Each structure stands twice: as C-alpha cells, then as structure tokens.
Image (cartoon, rainbow, N blue to C red):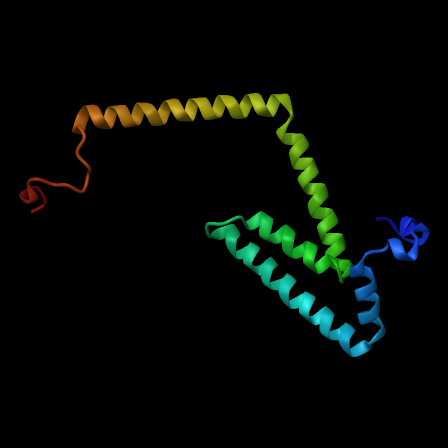
Length: 141
C-alpha cells in the first residue's frame, strides 16, 4: 500500500497490525524494544542467509527474507531490499535473453556429452570397480 493509499484508506480498513504498531509506537520504551527485536531477528535471518551462501542451503532466500524483516522498521533495509529486487529483475531479464539461453543450452549440452564420454571411458577401461577398491595392495609398495 502506498502512502497516498494509506491516507485515503478508512481508519477501520487498516488492519489489526497497523493499530498494534501505532499503539507500540506511542510508547518509546515499547517502540525501542520492538525495533531491537526486529533488528535481532532480521539480522539473524540475514546472517543465516549469508552463511548459507557458502554452505548448503537457500542463501538468497535467507538474505531476501532477512532484509524484508529488517525493512519493516529500517529505511536502510528498505533501500537494500529495493536494490536487491531491481538486481533480481535485471537477472531475470538477462536469463530470458534468447542469445544467452542458446549459449547456456549449448554449454550444458557439451558439458553433458563430455561427462558422459568420460564416464563411458572409465567404465570401458576399469569396469564397474570403484577406484578405492584395490585388489593387489602390493602395487603401492
């Protein structure tokens, strides 16, 4: 909802969440505690997303969700989330570019053929034996 739409909206049309937040904003201590809680949870999710970028897991999703949580209270997070959405839109447009799709399809096909050829060559030379199963350990001495 834009700012103009919020001004035009009837007070009873605004949800319970808005009324709840307004009540918290009136009390400085509650507001500070609320913002600290949002910062703690949003930062934890954001850091978890950053960690998942180098470990298995949905890192980008964690980063976007962390920024979305933080953007409910902080303007800097809203700007960062806006930039992330703009970058995602640009990446989507580039992914649908026909020349890039064709190039990626060709590279994927060539890579698949090379991996299949390597696997076939290995099986033709060594059979179905795994490399760590050595029948004659004297070979290594």
